[in-house]
Image 1 (cartoon, rainbow, N blue to C red):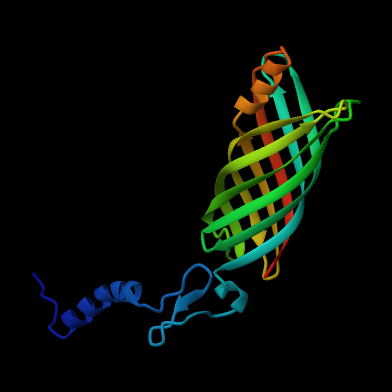
Image 2 (image 1 turned 180 degrees about the horizontal axis):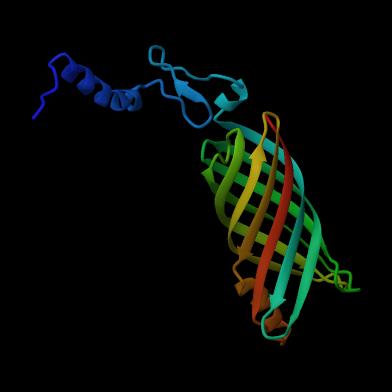
Length: 210
């Protein structure tokens, strides 16, 4: 059996350990091209410095649509209108709040649905530069106003998923939510017209980040 020469053995051992040394390097770049400086500990980027920002505040306007599907009946109500959205985020987490005003668009009745929601987003790059993908959840309250000027309060929790992109000063989000149906079904029970409802909300938001 041929033995490796002695000078070659240390060289091979060192080359085998090299990948582990690279992984352990405190200055290795993350997927934003950034890292903590090995000496100062300062987080910075090798390239676009906007990528070093971990988050901040975003204020935007959007388009909100809400759909009530009446299961087993083959009918629906569709509401749409503008929204105002505010978000405060850090890394993979953000708190958000919004106010919206929508009108019923698939009926001649003058019915509006307005209200607010508060919640949180958790997921990839929610508050950082670049592409983001996240889950969301929170609480909503809406007021249904009918032609006779009577108001009916609807509330519950929502869960959803969203995606979008953050630039240095701007952001875009598209977000689909499912709303707990108890409040909507209670409304129809009070009208003596029981219904099995599934409610969804689609929001598209354009924001300014600072």
